[in-house]
Image (cartoon, rainbow, N blue to C red; front, side, top):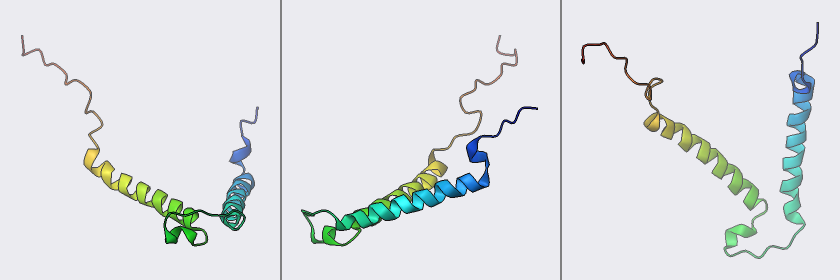
Length: 89
């Protein structure tokens, strides 16, 4: 019997990917200390402003999209043609 498992089927490997993403986010957050800023607004001088702004923007986008789905969602058979009964002839 052939083993169809992929490398992300192992929970240990998924944990490694998640921890790697946490580390990458922390490094990018700390990289804010390593370059000179030329802000247009004073709030941009705050440490980690762009990381926090991006995170809040992404979370807001997801929450708004979930609410927008309720407004725009159509039924499962919305685009299917209604079946003809034969009485139309």
